[in-house]
Length: 389
Ligand code: FES
Image (tube, rainbow, N blue to C red; front, side, top):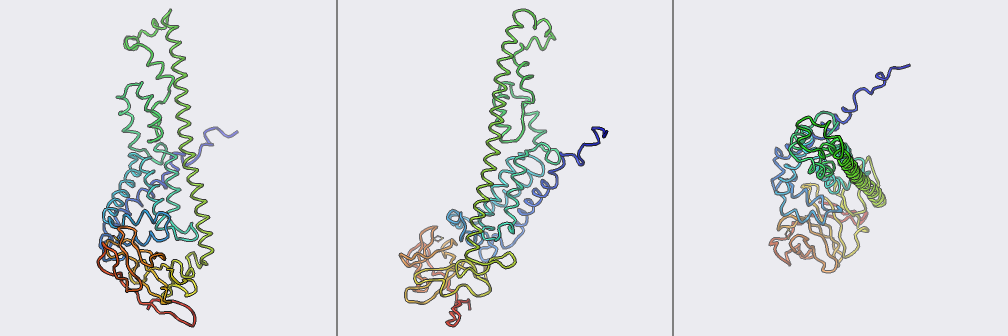
């Protein structure tokens, strides 16, 4: 017979999350530092400017309507992303506020997935979806047994020691849910200690205390308190279960959204080596071809990316049959404009500027003061291809 000890796993289960935790921590710290050292990130004239990235990623994104409002505060958003990434990375590395750090890592990855990675097809070619599930794993695990010790374990214990026992039991569910640490190790022990008078503990008089009438009263109290503690334990387990269920539900919902998104992309464009081919002039460009004439009916528009600067572009089929194209970056503060068939204008959702595409995109509504930048295009009447000149 194999001795019991020979069946122990190697390496210890405590080390299983070590590679994942280190990878996430180092990657997020690196991502923050990389943005600080990137000369383009805060340069409004550069392709890699955070404002241009926001404007570009907002096109076709399910959170695009929200993102455009941040384009005019791009520098602030950039600073918040940098500080957030570094704080999340350090929190994960040192295990300080480990679960909150993982939670915000999940939120940031979710935002990146819904914007920067949203047009990646199939969805699993994008990195952000993997980060989402990696962070969920750390959230569910919490700081204990997460590869190596966390600061939370060392900080919380002496902190909790100063809190009265009664308060400890009250705040225990919050600690368990938010920090992933159960501060009440044995509710029955604490209950018994808390119901015993202080003088009995201090003077070593437990033997006398447990005699006679006082003993019966004490036992009654103890049973009642144990029941209460068990109820609290059940409530805590319920909260943890609900929390895990919510995360699982979110994951299932996200997966369903992915399948829906992929089916949409699959019907509008074919795939070649994991990237989306031109979708009949709807969203993307390949080389200089931005659309087919047949794909953009009169009084409608199609979006594309301008290869020379990475800005979003908008192609408009005017009522007079002519095609015109502009850089869709609003000249006021950089939000992407879109075509409104009712007014036949290019409108900015951020502060209400409007441009007339039939008149070289001149400003018809402030606060913008200069027209949109024109993009030179050519329409091939033989093939119907519209290309950037
Ligand atoms: S960014 Fe202000 S109106 Fe367009």
